[in-house]
Each structure stands twice: as structure tokens, then as C-alpha cells.
Length: 254
Image 1 (cartoon, rainbow, N blue to C red):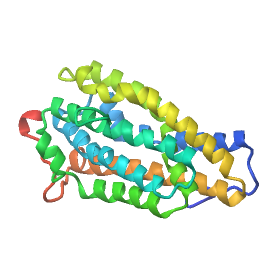
Image 2: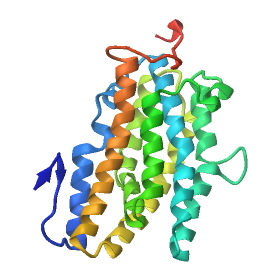
Image 3: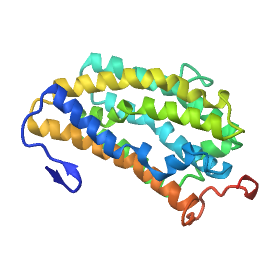
């Protein structure tokens, strides 16, 4: 059954059925299906549009450790905290020149964006900020089970990353493997992260409502990712209406 586009379950699912239901959500709603991603993978974005994507995605990347710290602050289970703190280390790194955030800055710099401008966040779309900040609040305010479940989009990330890297290397002459180094680490980190989160949800979602909460958390996270691409498409593809203060690509990048 569905309500408002979301599947509603009426009986308790087995662990395998819960995983199947989660994967079905990804098949239908993961942002790999978004028209902006399709343009990116087909080599149809100009450099300015790629810059806008990387700039706005940086805001998301920068908030992931904050989201994870919010989750950890609510976890009384040391095993969960030990697992989750690794995610913060993966993004923040062991120093200022390491970690996922630093590697994403290599991407923005490789695409021609000034690092200080990226870090200032001044050109980020308001819709990006609204969507990402809503994700941080969701993890902070909803149940711990829902907070963990909202990370399950990582189940679908490796396939998208593989496609993205191959497509960018093939279609954009100014892109090389060095500036795409962020994605190399995620090919191993994302499966590890998602395996833990999936097992946690299967173990702790013991009622119909708890299982529904897990599914709804994944719906929500898919919506967060999709909304970010909606904003990029609206502002930089069609109809091309960027709000005041947003990043405007140089005409030479078009």
C-alpha cells in the first residue's frame, strides 16, 4: 500500500523482506534517476554547470560530519559510537590535508573554483541549504533508529559512483583521476557504512511501526538528495533562474 507516494506496510517484515523493501525505494527514488545526473553522465553539462554541482554538493559534504556527530551524541551504545566515529574521521580526516571534505575541495579546485569561495558557502543555493539543513535536523530530532536508517542511501552509492567517475573521465577533458580522488575512498567506505546500518536497522526494527520508520527515513533521505538536484536543474539548466547571491558561472565556462 502507498500513501502520499510512500509505501505503507501492514505486517511485520522479515529481515530479507525489509532489505528488499529498502532496495525497492532506492530503485525508484535514488537521485541517480534525476535528469541532472543523466546530463552529467552523458557529458551534456558545461563546465559552469559542473562547477555549480560541485559547489553545492560541497555544502552537503561539509554537513555530513555534523550530522554524524549529532547522531553520536544520542547513542548510548559504545559499539554504535565506535562504528559511527569512523564516518566522521572518513570525512574530516586525520588532519587538515586529509579526508573526504579535503578531497572534495580538490574537485572544486580542479574545476576552477577558488577554495576560499567554496568554503565561504556564499554561492550555495538556498534550496541546497534548506534541504541539507533539514537532513541534519532530522538526524538530530527523530528517533535513533530513523537517524541510522537515513544513511541507507549508501546502499546505492557505489553503483552511482562507478558510473559517475567513468562518465566524467570519458566526457570532460578537464577532469582527471586526481581531482576525482574523493570517489575512490567512497567505493570502499560506502559499502562498509551501509552494511552496518542495514544490519542495525534489521536488528532494531522489531515492530511494524519501527520498520515503517526505517522505510520512511530512506524516503526522506532520497527526497533530500533529489531536492538538491531539482534546485541545480532549475537554476543552471532550465529555466535558468538563479536566486540573488547564487554562484554565476563565467561565460567562458558555458
